Length: 119
Image (tube, rainbow, N blue to C red; front, side, top):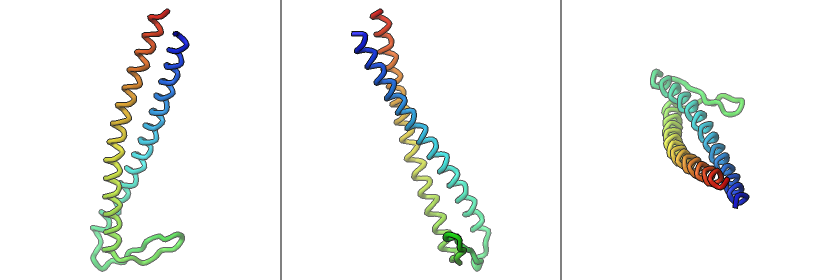
Protein backbone atom coordinates (compact mmCIF):
# COMPACT_ATOMS: atom_id res chain seq x y z
CA UNK A 1 0.00 0.00 0.00
CA UNK A 2 2.86 2.39 0.75
CA UNK A 3 4.32 2.18 -2.78
CA UNK A 4 0.86 3.06 -4.09
CA UNK A 5 0.74 6.17 -1.88
CA UNK A 6 4.28 7.12 -2.85
CA UNK A 7 3.33 6.91 -6.52
CA UNK A 8 0.23 9.05 -5.90
CA UNK A 9 2.40 11.56 -4.04
CA UNK A 10 4.93 11.73 -6.88
CA UNK A 11 2.16 12.19 -9.44
CA UNK A 12 0.50 14.93 -7.41
CA UNK A 13 3.82 16.73 -6.85
CA UNK A 14 4.46 16.59 -10.61
CA UNK A 15 1.00 18.09 -11.29
CA UNK A 16 1.76 20.79 -8.71
CA UNK A 17 5.07 21.63 -10.41
CA UNK A 18 3.41 21.81 -13.82
CA UNK A 19 0.73 24.13 -12.45
CA UNK A 20 3.46 26.30 -10.90
CA UNK A 21 5.17 26.50 -14.30
CA UNK A 22 1.88 27.56 -15.87
CA UNK A 23 1.56 30.29 -13.25
CA UNK A 24 5.10 31.52 -14.00
CA UNK A 25 4.21 31.75 -17.71
CA UNK A 26 1.08 33.75 -16.89
CA UNK A 27 3.05 36.14 -14.68
CA UNK A 28 5.63 36.67 -17.44
CA UNK A 29 2.87 37.35 -19.99
CA UNK A 30 1.22 39.76 -17.56
CA UNK A 31 4.47 41.67 -17.06
CA UNK A 32 4.98 41.94 -20.83
CA UNK A 33 1.44 43.21 -21.28
CA UNK A 34 1.91 45.81 -18.53
CA UNK A 35 5.02 47.09 -20.34
CA UNK A 36 3.19 47.21 -23.68
CA UNK A 37 0.20 48.96 -22.11
CA UNK A 38 2.43 51.52 -20.40
CA UNK A 39 4.26 52.27 -23.65
CA UNK A 40 0.97 52.71 -25.49
CA UNK A 41 -0.42 54.94 -22.72
CA UNK A 42 2.65 57.12 -23.15
CA UNK A 43 2.20 57.27 -26.94
CA UNK A 44 -1.49 58.13 -26.48
CA UNK A 45 -0.55 61.02 -24.18
CA UNK A 46 1.96 62.25 -26.74
CA UNK A 47 -0.66 62.06 -29.50
CA UNK A 48 -3.09 64.05 -27.34
CA UNK A 49 -0.49 66.83 -27.04
CA UNK A 50 -0.02 67.11 -30.82
CA UNK A 51 -1.80 69.58 -33.07
CA UNK A 52 -4.30 68.10 -35.52
CA UNK A 53 -2.01 68.94 -38.44
CA UNK A 54 1.07 67.32 -36.94
CA UNK A 55 3.07 64.90 -39.02
CA UNK A 56 3.77 61.50 -37.47
CA UNK A 57 5.73 58.54 -38.72
CA UNK A 58 5.35 54.83 -38.22
CA UNK A 59 8.31 52.46 -38.18
CA UNK A 60 7.81 49.68 -40.74
CA UNK A 61 10.87 47.46 -40.68
CA UNK A 62 13.86 49.76 -41.15
CA UNK A 63 11.80 52.53 -42.81
CA UNK A 64 9.80 55.43 -41.33
CA UNK A 65 6.49 55.81 -43.17
CA UNK A 66 4.27 58.89 -42.90
CA UNK A 67 1.00 58.18 -41.10
CA UNK A 68 -2.16 60.20 -40.46
CA UNK A 69 -2.56 61.31 -36.84
CA UNK A 70 -6.09 59.91 -36.59
CA UNK A 71 -4.91 56.56 -37.92
CA UNK A 72 -2.09 56.50 -35.36
CA UNK A 73 -4.47 57.37 -32.52
CA UNK A 74 -6.87 54.65 -33.62
CA UNK A 75 -4.07 52.06 -33.74
CA UNK A 76 -2.86 52.97 -30.25
CA UNK A 77 -6.40 52.87 -28.89
CA UNK A 78 -6.91 49.38 -30.36
CA UNK A 79 -3.67 48.23 -28.76
CA UNK A 80 -4.78 49.58 -25.39
CA UNK A 81 -8.14 47.80 -25.64
CA UNK A 82 -6.36 44.58 -26.59
CA UNK A 83 -3.91 44.88 -23.67
CA UNK A 84 -6.71 45.53 -21.18
CA UNK A 85 -8.67 42.54 -22.45
CA UNK A 86 -5.63 40.27 -22.26
CA UNK A 87 -4.80 41.50 -18.76
CA UNK A 88 -8.33 40.66 -17.62
CA UNK A 89 -8.10 37.23 -19.24
CA UNK A 90 -4.75 36.57 -17.57
CA UNK A 91 -6.09 37.70 -14.19
CA UNK A 92 -8.87 35.10 -14.51
CA UNK A 93 -6.40 32.41 -15.56
CA UNK A 94 -4.13 33.28 -12.65
CA UNK A 95 -7.02 33.06 -10.16
CA UNK A 96 -8.03 29.66 -11.53
CA UNK A 97 -4.42 28.46 -11.45
CA UNK A 98 -4.03 29.64 -7.85
CA UNK A 99 -7.12 27.60 -6.94
CA UNK A 100 -5.60 24.55 -8.67
CA UNK A 101 -2.36 25.06 -6.73
CA UNK A 102 -4.29 25.17 -3.47
CA UNK A 103 -6.12 21.94 -4.34
CA UNK A 104 -2.82 20.24 -5.20
CA UNK A 105 -1.34 21.41 -1.88
CA UNK A 106 -4.29 19.95 0.02
CA UNK A 107 -4.10 16.62 -1.82
CA UNK A 108 -0.33 16.41 -1.22
CA UNK A 109 -0.85 17.10 2.49
CA UNK A 110 -3.53 14.38 2.73
CA UNK A 111 -1.32 11.83 1.00
CA UNK A 112 1.59 12.73 3.27
CA UNK A 113 -0.67 12.24 6.30
CA UNK A 114 -1.76 8.85 4.99
CA UNK A 115 1.86 7.81 4.47
CA UNK A 116 2.78 8.99 7.98
CA UNK A 117 -0.17 7.14 9.57
CA UNK A 118 0.78 3.89 7.77
CA UNK A 119 4.28 3.88 9.28
